[in-house]
Length: 247
Image (cartoon, rainbow, N blue to C red; front, side, top):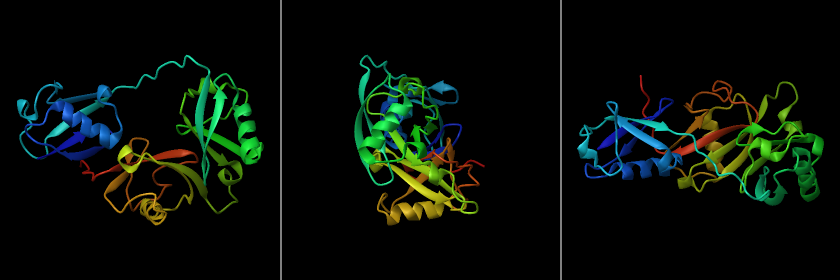
């Protein structure tokens, strides 16, 4: 049977068996959304579903049963060592750089300049979709940690000539799609379908069922990036599967 997982921001369906445990369902959600099992709370009719019980132990016996998913914030461990390695992502490549968490954003830009020759004044650095926009702030103040990914965009591209309406965005795929991070430049007027086609043509994604999420909202294929409120440096997340919308 298929159950509907409702997160509040969106809904999607998953195939489950009557004898499957709640823990197995959570593991499927982890594969789909990347949300750790420990951060998930599932409930039906205000009953919390316990990991050791089966689906048939609850009123989950018909197709379309709604299961509410609550996601707890992930607590990241405090870095005990200030020396860390991060990945710097640019349009055409990814490079590893060792930094000290007490370094400033300006210092990181200088390292990228030395390695890649990028003009420091034109660099815009993004960590998890948030611009690191104060050169004198320490990296640790932005929450940088070991294996963090910093996306580098060009301010010449972020501030396009009038009328071109170009924006930069980052597409992050789920673990089932190799957890790829892809930096792109597109027109604000481009639709999600055009974005999908661009990723398919570039062989970043397979020809399969998947959907896009922007700021916890499912994106519509026929609507433009502007319609969805996508701005420079925003992250779009890609997940496997099909989505049924609530009306």
